[in-house]
Length: 358
Image (cartoon, rainbow, N blue to C red; front, side, top):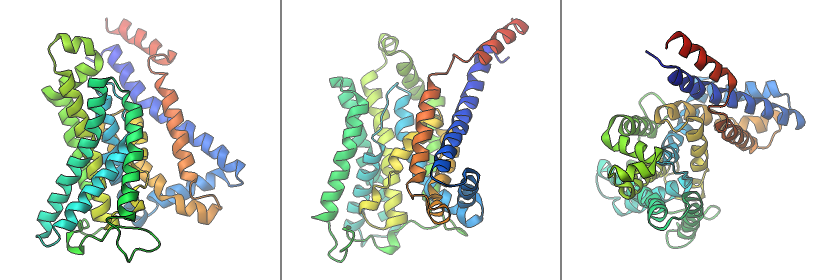
């Protein structure tokens, strides 16, 4: 039997994110109106660019793939009560690791190169965020601040390498590394323009969901996140759990970097720092840190990212207008977090349900 408490939690988990998105749409509409554009026409253009045709939907899926992976970089540590926002840095490090291995193994069979690039990206991204876990547990360094600062270090390292030791002399206008061989790039899903990075994202979200919800490791992580003192009293290795979860989180974002390098750009350059990591934070919060829900939210947000060009061409809005929308969604979602357990409608329903089903 569904208890009143479970009913309230489930209803809030569904209704509040939807209400937050709707509120952000209204505020964004007011912003568009102030900029001289028809809000309803803007909404229509966003839908057309994101889901209006098979071509546009494939563009959306291409953008959704890295969002699924980077969202896990925030969603997994959240199970331990950690707020990690180093997604962008882990993605960049994963991309750099993939490029380094891809170029050094250029003569090997393509399948070997691709697997090696994926492993290198997973290790680089995982170690990068594991540093956050080590600092948090053993030195009590705030994980949000340390992961944010690591983003800037990773981006600085990217700019240094592609503008210096790794620079391809032929890349004049946009400093880049030497390109990965075409044979070593990720293939497209047959019959589509979507690369296999989307499959990587879906598989990663499914695996991490079952890891957290259906294994003793996940139970231990959720226990430590719920009450760290109780976890220590129960003998759980909180330090190892923290580092392990952070490594898994970073490895997912690192794999997103490999996908961007091996399926989209073909090399490392400033395009690797395309804000997918920061957008992944938003996906994680809207999805309430649920890896399965993150797949749906990533597709929705990927559609919004795909609409930047059409808003500029049709409505004369800046291309960065979609970033304004993202920012509004993030602020509204953060505010909605403070409403959980406080809305009278759910509290009244709880009392009625408890009376009917004592």
